[in-house]
Image (cartoon, rainbow, N blue to C red):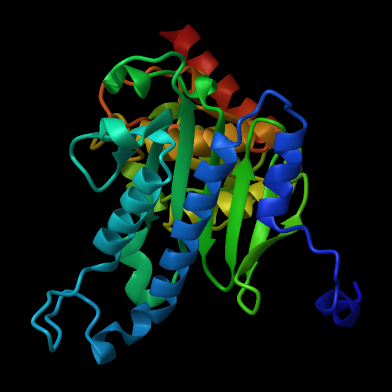
Length: 341
């Protein structure tokens, strides 16, 4: 790749241009979705800037202290939440918001309402901020079918009804991965332009990968199929090479690597947390949506992840997602265990 020539490319596909191109394929479109996405992108840029300064927080009084004006400084996850809630409401295109940070859903004021619901985790992996590990924002978008008073029923629906999903990872670079139901595309923030540029067009996950990603510290509490699968990754009986273990502990970073390199990410239920730890609406659904759009699959241990219908906004679910053939392997182990019962 000619990096020097690349640095001076003049025909840049920005995320705004990309979304407008997609919009032009749908003549009936009113541009609402494009406006909503541009507000999400703005929120991501703001959080990216705040995350980059987080290491200086103690020096410049940004983290939970009081500044010289006597204003209390906000922790980064609280700040990120406020940024996204305000950006989404001010877009005038949302009716109901569900955030990992807020116990209740936010119903948007009638004068500012639109036809979309957004579910999001404003800063996933925020416990990793102090050690410089990649963290991110995860979001999913539902459309409201008709003109009615928005309520929880509009978001407590199966993940296969999502119209778009994505995440923004704040790491060595700021990367936004997005799907509107027609494949997956990755954009990287060019700090000199302040724009997200298309750098990973039409992402496809390899059919099988060489990496497995799981917190092995929980191994003593796992069920039979998960234990068997991880054992098989380490000690394959078919003569193939063992898989490598990579686990960051930040879902956005682990899923991003899985999406690009292939392999499988597991967060199973166990004796301690029978439903796993990851939340259905704003972690399991968006990541499963992206994974399926990239040619992979996602499984809960009993069914396709996107077929779940949550009963509460912060419900949790086990998840196994990644390369198609790797997920098939773990599905076979769960099917065999069910037969024995």
